[in-house]
Length: 394
Image 1: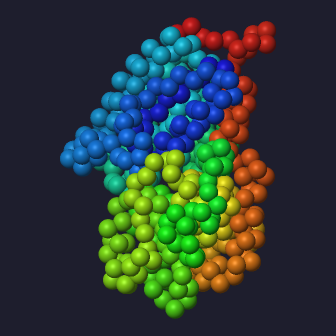
Image 2 (image 1 turned 120 degrees about the vertical axis):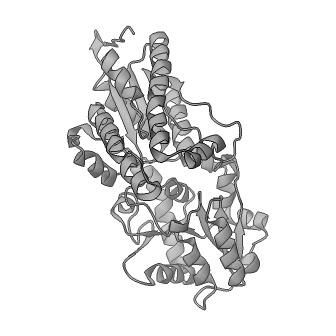
Image 3 (image 1 turned 45 degrees about the vertical axis):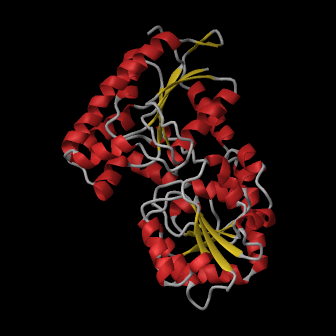
């Protein structure tokens, strides 16, 4: 099929991983993909932000910035319409973003299916964490796009509940979780080699990957390491960067942890597996309640014993005492107790690691499987004549 893929993401982070891997997998399956999107930064380093966008958001009044976001839909629509006239797609695949109406507008004009990937309830998220100047407009545009799509593809069933609450029937909602590129992680070194490369050959390595923020709870790991329950050879490796890094480094200094804690800073995607390979215990101390964290799939792909909160969205992928140790966020000290148990019990770590490694294949949690699923969904929607796809004339 011919797929017109649209997104508004210019940053190099987990969003970019999802976009690039799904597009590559669709092409690997033999489909033609025409991408319409902002120009991405030249840097290949993960975690890099689009500086001028951040400055604009910080400088302008919220309402004015949101009107500019909405206005971008017109510019994006012109680009989409031009691409559609030349490419003649069978369907539109759009990564949902707030105030982005372009795909919905083109779908109405061309009368071709729109598949909408949803990774967060952004109107709710922005209002809660960053603030909105025009919350009514955010909710209105979000509802229009969600209800106007032929299929909405949330990354968790919990998020699907948010979509359904806005008036989208469940029969038009298909949960498609994040995935992994198995080939990307197949060349990772052994844990022994990875630890040797870090200069920690005899360490028990606790690891966290991603753009670290205050709410991730990594400070709890530092405080636990400074206590008496942590083994003396415990080390913490944070693979990535983020706004919480400076405070965490300061806390590590106050706790006299010294070389027991290390931050890699921003690194290229290609180097993530060689660092995650060193983990004995993979950390997910906290999670947004509707998210499908990419780091979990990386931990699973490299057969790591995982510690994560027992939330419904996490339980869609992880099973307590099978491929992870899940803790109760409502019980004080339960996270720290889980860390202590895993660090003291090598047999438990090995059993959970084996369960984690088997999960990807058992659940088909790969980008390639996601691409196949997306196209199966689209095939049910695309008009056909005589066994071939009927393409509209733009």
